[in-house]
Each structure stands twice: as structure tokens, then as C-alpha cells.
Length: 496
Ligand SMILES: Nc1ncnc2c1ncn2[C@@H]1O[C@H](COP(=O)(O)OP(=O)(O)O)[C@@H](O)[C@H]1O
Ligand SMILES: O=C(CO)[C@@H](O)[C@H](O)COP(=O)(O)O
Image 1: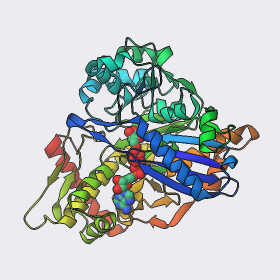
Image 2: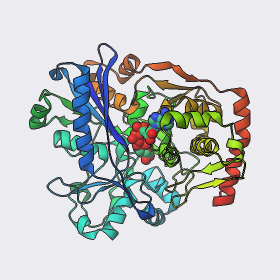
Image 3: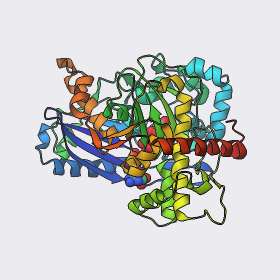
Image 4: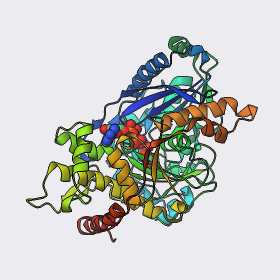
């Protein structure tokens, strides 16, 4: 039996799986709160992740109704890029600035320039720095919170921090490290000269975690914690990884030819590659996978965060929100939403605000505004898919994950907007399943068990979730998507 954990932006989810039986025994989750402020501030207290993990783990073990001593290993997936800066006693010196924090846009622009623009970034890092990556958060902390910065003894990412809490070890792996912005994604090593340009006072050998292979354990569960949780002290904690990396594993996206799309707080698209990717667009991130390969990725910042804002404004529950959207026609009777409530990464508009365009007396209805925000969030992902170019070629199916994938109307919208069939895995949280699969791989690979075999046993697709593109809607969306591009040109001077 294995445990997978996914520390997302809004909650931590835990899954317990029986690898031999090929079944998911239990799932549980606990929410986190978000510290929101002016100028794009989005932070979280890492202590909340630990509290949520404890709560969800206890519940999942209870629901699984198994002997906890049967658990062999735990894997942890985490929201990417968050800056977890710890002092020498392992306490955060400041709340974690998250992937969706856009307060550091100016610092990111300055860093890109310092590294020699897009070409310099590509040369040094294998990707172009974007607002949201860890690098500009560290530059921001140095400038704005010098007292906290001076106390830094180690720098971790959210999943590294949970691994540290579980094992006492400060390690990381290439998948999550590739989103820091001071890591060479081709050579899979820290880029110490880039780190020195960001944080010259910090010694990278001291503050950066040791890099391990994806198949290696981060460590053993701390004995005191094992006793407290009722688990065996022999439990391994695998390397874990970024949530998109482990979402890829949880959807079986570990060989070329598949696209995984996530409708989580963020929206993401990724495709496995056995070699580093140099895409035509700076917005395609050449991240590493948490399986030894690469995972080119597009991330939009406003997906369920945007739909939730509009849903809550109208006081609708999820079911009624879905009904309202289904009741409006494709194109929301001319209403276009650019849902960049907190700036945006793709399109690259870190300091943008949201707009609703094309409003007239007749079309201002709840149904149209709800539909327009969901369409706008989906068009952002279509925009990303277009930038993917040849990376998406040959992908015959999109594996859809994240909370938004539970919505049938959204699944159909993704199928129609991308003109590609969409299907979801059976598990509620694919990144947590990916973490459990990686844990099983870490525990069993010495005995010749491959990750491919583990995915074949545990990644079950839900046939009932299949959404095929409907030709009429596909044609209608072509025009509505052109209207979205026109709105981007008018509001943000982005050429179609
Ligand atoms: N049926 C649904 N329709 C639209 N959004 C949904 C639906 N079910 C869940 N969500 C949204 O999914 C989001 C949570 O997704 P999740 O992937 O767990 O996020 P994260 O991993 O970023 O914490 C919440 O904002 C929730 O409102
Ligand atoms: O920043 C990115 C990817 O580059 C985000 O995808 C985060 O990894 C957060 O994920 P969710 O909480 O939306 O799952």
C-alpha cells in the first residue's frame, strides 16, 4: 500500500492505493487559506500545509480501513514555484510567496534583462524566466524584507518542505527544481552563477537542497512522526515533485503522445518529452519531468480562481453555476471575458487586470457572464495549446484533471474549443495518484518494477467522462476564439 499527497493551492489531497490490487482505497482533502494583498500578493503559511496533510492523511487512512503498518512509501506532489525560505531552526522566515503571486513582476523583468534577455535566459537556464517562478520571489524578499532575507538558512519548494517535515532531509529533484529559475533544465543542475546574481549574500552550497534522482528516496519517515501517525518507521518518502509533474504520472503521461490539461487553481498543459525542448515561444517552459525526462508546460494563472470569483459574486453553488453556463449559447451572446484577475502568465501579462467586453443591455445575464468567464479561462489554455505547436501534434486525446474537470459542461467546452476528445482519470486528484505511483516506483524499482507497469495498473480512465468535440460547437468556437484574440489586441496590444 502506498500514500500519495498533493499540496495544491486550495487544498491538500491524500490518496491511499493498493498497487497489487490496482485499486484506489481512499481519498481525503483539507483546505488551505490564501493571504491576498495589493499589487498581486498571494502567499500561504507553510504550517497550514502540514496541518492539512495531517488531517487529510488521518482521514484517508481511516477510510481505507487498512492496517497503517502496511504502508510502504509516501510520495508528495506540490504546487510549483512557491518560495519556502527557512531559518536555521527550520521555521519559515516569511510566508511562502506562491506561483500565482504577481507582486514580483518588476523583479522578474529586471532579472530577465540582467541575464541577457530571452536569449540569455535560454542559454543559461534552458527556459525563459516568467513571473511566478521562484527566482523573482527571492529577489523581492531580498529587497523588501531584508531582515527576513538575512535569516535564510535554506530555500525549499512546497513539496520539498513537506518532504523535509516528513523526513528531516533537505533535498529536491529536477522536476520541481526546474521551476525555480536558478536551475539549468537541460543539465539538471543548480545554476550557481544565476543564483549569485539574484542572492549574492547566500551560499548556494549551504542554502539550496541536494538534488536527487526522481526514483530515489528523499529519506525515511522520521521515527517520531511514524509513531505519531501509526505508520511503520520503515516507510520511504520518494523524491516527489511539482504537481504538474506528478499529475503527468497520474494520467499516464510518461511517454510522448499525450497531453495532460489541468483545470486547477491554475490551468496547465503539458506533454512528456525524452529530451529537453526548445520551443518557439518563451511562454512554453522547458521543465523537467519527475520521471527522468522533460515536461514542456504552459501555465495560465486564472482558471478556477477566475470562475470561482464570478460564481461567488452571484452566490451560486457549483451545480447551479454549471446549469447557468449550460443554459447560455456558445459565445455567451457576444460577451468576452479576459479573466486576468491577478495578472497572467500565458498570455504574458503579469500586471494585467480582468475585462468583460461586448456587454450590451440585452446580453448582461448571469448565464452569459458565467459562460464568458469559463470560456475566457478555456481560451487561455487554447492560446497555450497553439504555442505548443509541434509538441501537441499527434496528441489524439487530452487527459483532463484538476477540480474543474469534474464539470461536464467544462469538459465539453475544452473538447469543442480544442477540437480534441477529452477524458478524465477515475481518481479525483491525479497528482496525488501520481505521487503514490512514484512512491511505489521508488520502493519497487530495485526489483525491476517500472513506472510504466505501475501506471498501467493504476491509471484508470473514466469512460463516462469522455467528451467528443461536437462539429457545430467547434465551428462556432472558431469565431468566438477569434473574438478573444481581437479583445487581447484591443485591451493589451497583443497581436493575434
Ligand atoms: N464541478 C465543478 N465546476 C467548476 N469548478 C469546480 C468544480 N468542482 C470543483 N471545482 C473547482 O476546482 C477548484 C479546485 O481544484 P483543484 O485542482 O483541487 O485546485 P488546486 O490543486 O489548485 O488546489 C476549486 O476552485 C473548485 O471550485
Ligand atoms: O505555476 C504553476 C505551473 O508552472 C501552477 O500550475 C502551480 O503548480 C499550481 O498548481 P495548481 O494549484 O493550480 O494545481
